Image 1 (cartoon, rainbow, N blue to C red):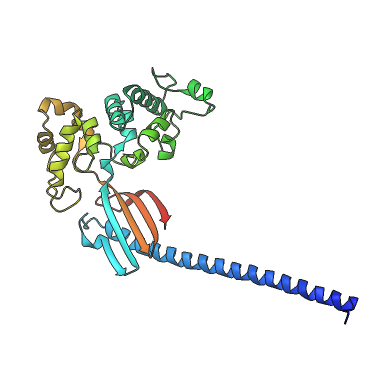
Image 2: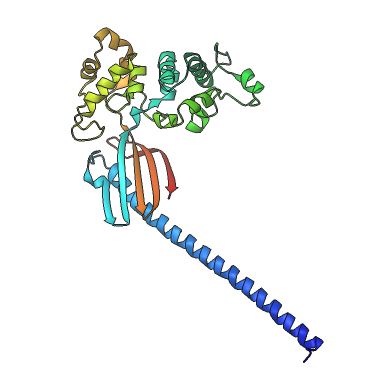
Length: 306
């Protein structure tokens, strides 16, 4: 029996309608599924942020020590927070040492981080040229003329750095990034200035104190106590700068030059608090100044990871 033309056209329309409806259903299903996934992620992020803020609140309290059990807590098998407190003075304050035109510290630390003596000298000159107020180019530095040749006529700013993002603009910083990709974890603009010997790593201590790296490593090993870790109950911290000097093996005469460049404490601290929900992590970092008055937040940023 032959199908009429009208019947054939009707069947074709029905088939097209089925295809279109199916496509719409697939699209709607995907949209709903995607929306549901985003809702779940948003819910996890909200809970992770709440957990991170809880750890942050504890860490901000001046009575809470670095080793306090309040800084870590498991709420459930899938939910917890972990917070830590570190001295911001344990990092190299670029503005502080640049304003003192401390060429020796910069050259030494850049060499410890893998630059050749020539490249360390060049990067030092470029940093000092960036923060000084004049347009006189140091021997291996860069001022307006040199940056114009590189296609950046607006640089340098000829003032202290206002952010780490600015430091990334300095001519030659790419050499440091290639030699030590994590260099930003060891510098700051927010500390009080002098290097905190109670927490600083060996390379920074050796650079600032003009000593061999092995001497600085011995000092840090002694400071960390038997467990070999900073920030634990068995740390042996210097109670005065003179005690630090003796532990470093420096004479009074040697220490006279570097005394203003170091400290054994810093009111500026870095708090990192991570809220964890399943595999989702949200970390809040705050750089704060703690004192007798209100807490002053100098810097704050967040990072989400899976």
